[in-house]
Length: 174
Image 1 (cartoon, rainbow, N blue to C red):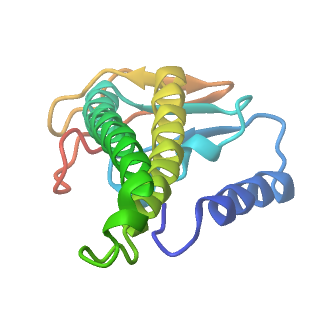
Image 2: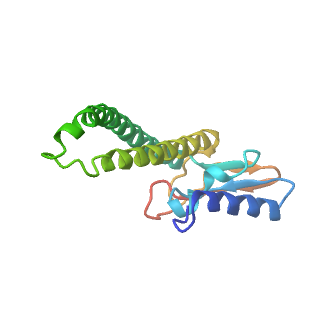
């Protein structure tokens, strides 16, 4: 994505773009895996074919699966912390009146509230990452070309495209 719009704004932007530019045949070709090129790919309508090189797809799958795994591990940790704190706070609720003159119990639930907010955000992040991974599974790929030589033609309807490998600060850019 652009980093300047929310996920909802990005989806709305892509929906408008396709609605205003309806063509008989539609496809999206990605030249490389930089975020400003592929960042909204999960919002492209499912009936629209998406193309990229095999290397770019592999690279993006590694990146997106790594992010998904990171969010899932953090989710497990937050769920464990919430369960611990909830049982701890249940105990504290039982004793706080008795010990309140000795131990200050003010705001002892703040951490739990923060963790629950993080839990909700992590669940959203996981759903977002899963959507990107599903989108990548649908992407059609072409073979990597040798530097300076076009790979096999990529055909879309009556249009033929010859991707040429270029140097552009990311693996497998065309």
